[in-house]
Amino acid sequence: MEKIIAYCGINCSECPAYLATQKDDVEEIKKVAKEWSSESMSFKPEEIYCEGCTLEGRHFSWCSDCPIRSCCREKGFENCAYCNDYFCDNLKNTFDKTPSARERLDEIRKKL
Image 1 (cartoon, rainbow, N blue to C red):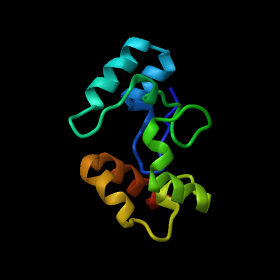
Image 2 (image 1 turned 180 degrees about the vertical axis):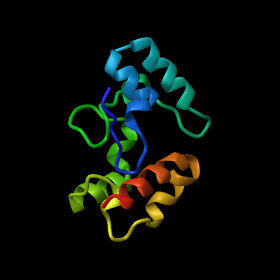
Image 3 (image 1 turned 90 degrees about the horizontal axis):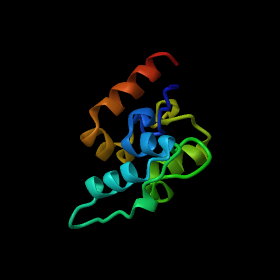
Image 4 (image 1 turned 120 degrees about the vertical axis):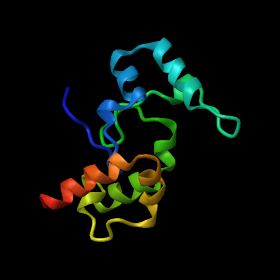
């Protein structure tokens, strides 16, 4: 499977929502919705389907509100590694939760 890197550096091709969407596995989608839900935030299965935030198609419900995605799309960047403002405050929360996202973007920047 081709590696799909989100604007923030997360590897979409390893994401449970992306994988379940690719398999069109309704039960797996329900499982991901339950796992990602908490007392403060609840997800319905139909909000989980995602083709990858950089691609056309269905997107996880948060994608429409994601400031990282909006910024990259407005600037026309493949991901945040291409930005002169890397890394900005928008990325802090993602990097705190997913350090591998920062490592991935740092590696991309080295090759630019």
